[in-house]
Length: 135
Image 1: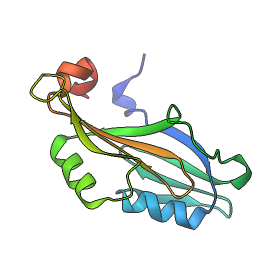
Image 2 (image 1 turned 180 degrees about the vertical axis):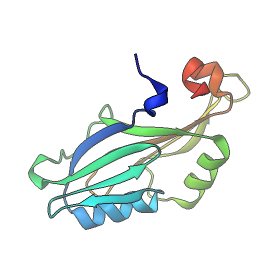
Image 3 (image 1 turned 90 degrees about the horizontal axis):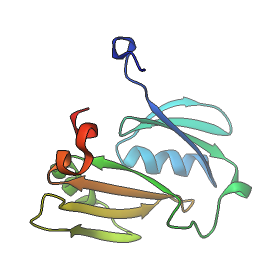
């Protein structure tokens, strides 16, 4: 059991990139905050997660299968603002299940190394996420 009095856990994801400077710039442009940095890796805090970008070009998958992606579920207005200023979508912004309690906005982009990032929003988060929406 997680003791919230000790602080909420932070999700951590580590993955390879071709060019560390380019990757850090991409995730900072998405709203990330740069953290620790070494010659071949860097941390970026993004959407409440800690991303560790590892400069290991030989480990980058090309093409990246769509089933291997990560992302964030954002508040609806934040999702609209973010996808409104981005370009180069792998999956253009669109709305699924309009007018229902499961209405969701989705878009997918790729970082400069081809890692896929899905950006989502739910019109009624509690209807889709249940208890996760209360966090």
